[in-house]
Image (cartoon, rainbow, N blue to C red; front, side, top):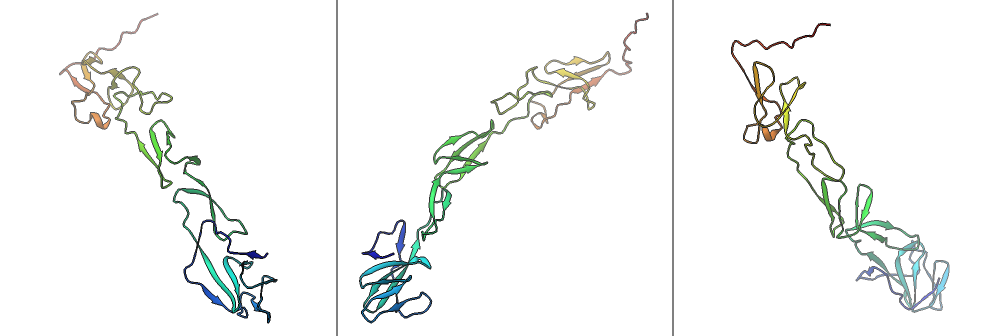
Length: 221
């Protein structure tokens, strides 16, 4: 293919220094005719014509009276936020087809705010990185919290409560002390007690001395 004049180079910067190759120089398949023409790529070029080497699309040459003067194109850096790069066979440099952020398989536009989950707030920054803030939920003040759709932190629908002991077989509401049997009084920890914010959900209990819990009466048929 014959180029007349110097065509524009999209997204390319030509090197400042031109490497002068004689048409007879091996490696690129150059040859020079006695009439001052240059032969390359299987074609004849006249003095003043420009062309790209078919063997190297990054090298552009001009046919001169002394031979082919060639320079190699340096590709510019792609945007940091480029997430889709294409390489076309006839192009020297790769192309950026899409900029943005990719987060968990989903593409977002630059500057876009998004919420990938109930507990995350994210922004697609200009460098193509999605930066997220994750909510830090305090331990729920109950042993049976519920997670609601669209909400990050769990809620205690039945109010604050705790287990009576490590067996976790009995739950009592928080607040005033509660007699769990005829001899034992228990109270759930509150925000003033050590361990509450670490998720301590066992009650603090006191037992009467020399007390024997009453056994529930059994009805006879």
